[in-house]
Image 1 (cartoon, rainbow, N blue to C red):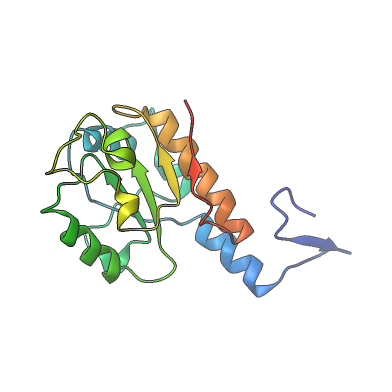
Image 2: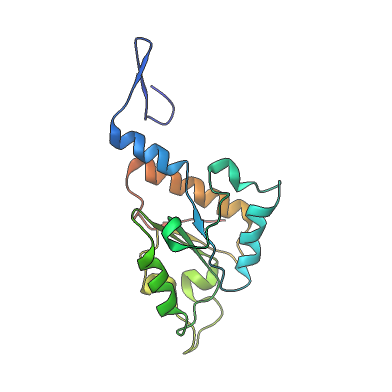
Length: 166
């Protein structure tokens, strides 16, 4: 059996189930949506643009501008109440399966912005799969979050609400 549990060696033949193969393929080709709201978006750009934090090794180098072509939404930065309906509409336009990562303290909990204009966590309107804390979170933390999401997709249980500590 392989390390990820998808393929089994049966006398020189590799076998698997269709569901396991599809989950394996989805986990190795996650296409994020270009959706930066504030300063955390700078760290998100750092993931895709340089060789040091090469997110392309996970099949996620193609940041999409259309929600129809993306299956991962990084909500990075503070979510204002005026922007909330837009985020909800973009999320609804994404095709299934789709995942959400709350990127940074502001997207996770509202951060230092405890006022009437800022939503206190994007999970008040969207199902969040992974929370990545930090102001801003480091690229290493985001890569770790993507790796955890890939593992959850392979197990077919991405809605666990994983919190990355670090």
